[in-house]
Length: 172
Image 1 (cartoon, rainbow, N blue to C red):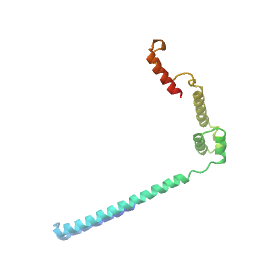
Image 2 (cartoon, rainbow, N blue to C red):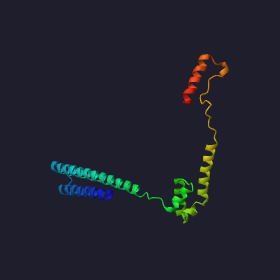
Image 3 (cartoon, rainbow, N blue to C red):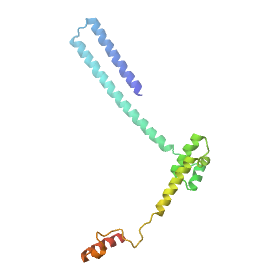
């Protein structure tokens, strides 16, 4: 679309340039007021054409972008049998997508691609991260996530009360 617009504009500019050259040849290089007015009219006409072509181009690009978005949305196909088997075995969607890419690249089936070293490393790193997250100690119910500014033996009565209120506010 943009090439035809540019070509139309280029052709119109070339035609105008040819007319200017003809006028110069006919008059020996002298230009009259009428020549300038004619050129000015032609120039405004070309600017108007360029503006309408720009608007048409913008509309066409907008339609093209909308159709691409619709194609992207409709191209999401439901899970295949192999993909659903892998998800049932505990693989994430990201891992299944990676396995699809590996299978396509190496001409393997999806179930064979799961045995590829790259997929195994991705799965093991995810499992290791999950294990470390589960192994991290969380505070028990009785411990206070609010730490006192001073040791309790050095606190005044007012400081004890404010610390107690902060702790109880977090328990609720």
